[in-house]
Length: 369
Image 1 (tube, rainbow, N blue to C red):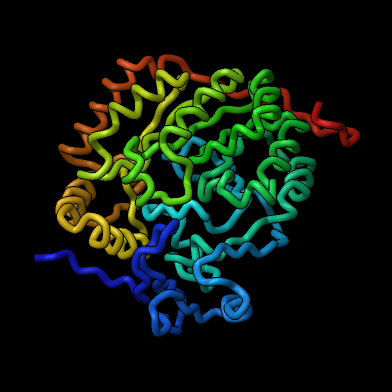
Image 2: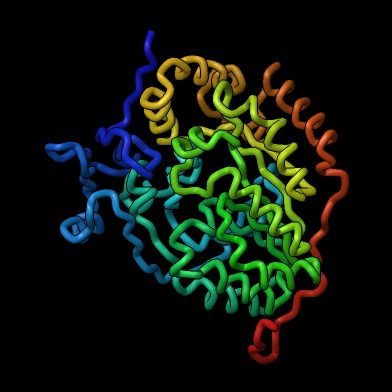
């Protein structure tokens, strides 16, 4: 029996975009419909309507945003940080599996193509961070950059909000952990290298597959896998502690590449590694299944069957302790393969501790160097 999906307004495969549909978010009361030629999804929100006439179909539109706060807090027991910063809302990389897609529903925008094309830049991010770090009650803890959307997605080239945030962190000696799929991080090696000398930064480069064609379909505007390995080399050469995050692991699609990715990362200079199983919360389930049917129809049933097998019969499991790794025989096998591959590649042999004792609030605004 073929896999059935409900994905809202149909869009089909778009060059340079991940989602094949633009379904309404779970909080919207108006259904979406495609125009006559099926090329441009129609969003019901006032924000989308305001710019619809002046925005070319499927071009990226970035709206400047004056955020009210910049540091997000969480108490999740399976995440190794309690503070994070996301300079952007939405992500142009277009990764079809992105667990952050449902957050666009809070904006009355679609977790589908809107998430990739209707972006928000927190233009006052560095200003807010300086104010929050200067508060008398602030206690220095690690801040993660890229926990939700990628801090080095393509629009960072022009907006440079991530670079501005790093400059503030360097000024305050605030430790930072970064995760990204983009080789654009090489641009900031001047800041990162100086921070690394004070044990203030570590970087994880996320790699899903080494197959260029698969990566182009999965994460169309992220750096190519080979380019990400070059970024690891550059980080290592600049003495920035770096690692690889094999994520997400997708059964029957990317899981067989785990050993190859870890070996390539080890050769590139990575010292750390981690992995996470595919997560399909809220609207991501229907978007991912529609993508599977479009790109890999013969594998679609097998992929979703194995996902359910590793999620106690469900398509998603949000329980702490299980959501990142899954459960059952295949989840255990995956964990064993990861451990063995890390041992072979010399990964995770030692831990890197970031220094929180250097933190200080500058008495005057100093230059970075």
